[in-house]
Image (cartoon, rainbow, N blue to C red; front, top):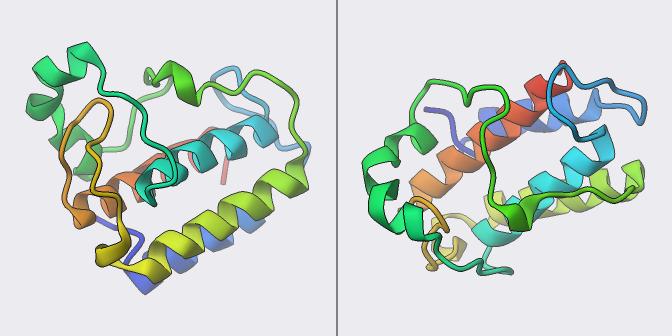
Length: 149
């Protein structure tokens, strides 16, 4: 599985992100492109340890059994559920959100495994740094595919 600690996967994600435009149309879902970038930043803030959402009750029960879905090769399906704290419904500035996400991606990848959060994922629970990195790649890939890049 690709992950954000791999230079070629990191470069791929950055190149795809550069193809996004303020008017990029979604292929599914409800978010506009700037909202999607803000949503991805919220997830990255968790991965770098800036935010610590509480564990979800259902995640405590079934999260460990589904953990491989976060890190395996199979892409996330369209309209996959998300934690309510990651929903972005207000209008956002595209350039600002794009710059913020790029900064967080760089912080995560340059920090390496030793700088990944030690807090558990809100649904999947305790993850290794490589699992976080693969999951963050997979999450970005999902949303970039949502907008055709």
